[in-house]
Image 1 (spheres, rainbow, N blue to C red):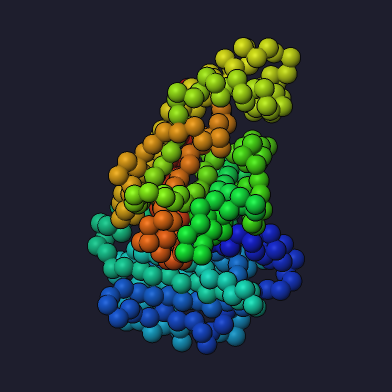
Image 2 (cartoon, helix red, strand yellow):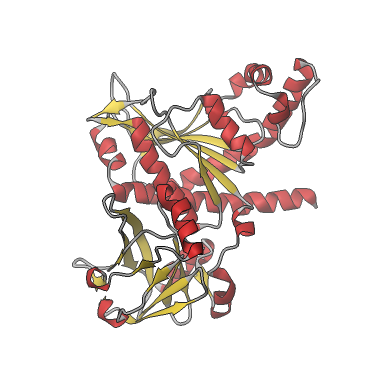
Length: 401
């Protein structure tokens, strides 16, 4: 269930993979799998260009399975990549015209500590870096079974290839805060708008790498987008979850850590009326045309939708904070808060806002500007969303019954 690609390259890469033009290839001379100096494994794969990929563990034989769309291994001696005493075998197979597979067979149990893809802006070449830690069999199975990442041999025929239909079943809209003429917070020569683009790209690649979800960004470059336009993107795309990403700064005092925000209940009634008056009523609630209804009725219907969505908002926030506590060392002193953020006003789409950190705090700013920290944040968020989606889907099924 795991794939990875950079946001700005997705459409180009997908189209080139299908057409066969510009097929990516492994550059063996700059690729390796080796033991890390202070324990663990490091796998670095240099590619002629970035491609979508996904990873799973296979239980028998114990292996890391990496599926690429599409990557050529022609002319490479993969055993020369192996510089580790912990790896038994590295092999390659071509699955079909769209997917190829690298299997790395281990002697013992490992879990992924961090993974990222770095794209060279000059020639579009890419490096996939995978860091693994040694774990017990129980820890290995506990983590990977819960996350749906542990495959059996019988799964290999179906798990490695994701259809467009499956991808479209659950849609996550990521909203990098600010942009263009609205840079947001600024500190140390950095703009919140740019940092949130980079963070959103990391979250997108982790979601695509770790799940089968379809991911949409409200913006993919440093452009201005109104708050209501961001909601419109979520509504028109049929979003199942909306997440707005921010990084605040304080002028006085000091604040630190990650905070998850939900919509303030106190503002609900007033916002229902404002929402009804500002938006095209045929687009406020999916599947419900409010045109022709008076404002009072409209407000009631919107408020009913919002009340139905409220427990789902709280549930996804709970999952995010649970995983963040496991994976991210620093949360704010009050990690769950409520506020009347405009981007959280969509009545029937679970919506949260995450302040990833405070740019005014040097340690937080360092995190936000460090790719490895962004990758860890993204993986934690992707895992939380995946856990929530499973429970949310089960709850919906029980309600139908």
